[in-house]
Structure formats: C-alpha cells, structure tokens
Image (cartoon, rainbow, N blue to C red; front, side):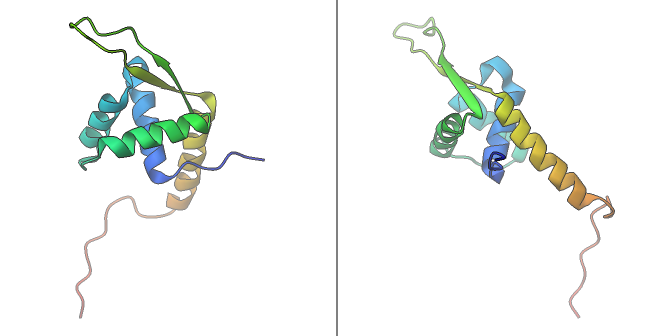
Length: 113
C-alpha cells in the first residue's frame, strides 16, 4: 500500500526541512516557511506538523549538543527521510501532470459583465 500523500502544509514543512539540511529545527523551519511563502506561520503549527511527520516516518529527529551560551539547551534537529522525499516528489509529479497543457502565464482577470 502506497503511503498517504502529505497535505499542503506538510509538503511545505518537508521541503523547508529538506532545504535546511542539518539546520532544521522548529524556529528555523518557521523562518524558512515565512521567507519562502510570504505568509505568517505559527510556531505551534510547525511543531505539531514536525512531530506528525516524524510519526509518519517522513522525518527523523535527533538532539543537538547544547548551545554554548550559559544554560544553553539542545535543539531537536529534523531531517527528511527517503519516505518524506518520496512523498513530496509523488505530489510534485501529480501536480506537474495537472499543469501539463495549461498556459504558463497568469491569465488577465476577467471583468464581470
């Protein structure tokens, strides 16, 4: 049975983690999403999605060494798994098929008449 396709927001989180490579933790993922999408994203939504994707085996995590500042804490670093890459690539292929044959430029808005 094929794994369930990730939702739109799960895809965005997976792609942000993939892009960030070894530096993907909650706040960096949120910052990447906001920078790339131009939309505000809550930290809670990011953390909830990171944990859900880890339970689906699309991400894996590990604890970093504590930060060097006094009282520094370890960060939970995430990385995309082969299953996560396969999930976003599956969605991309499906979207590419849907776009085939459509004009590439945004059409001018139609005036209601």
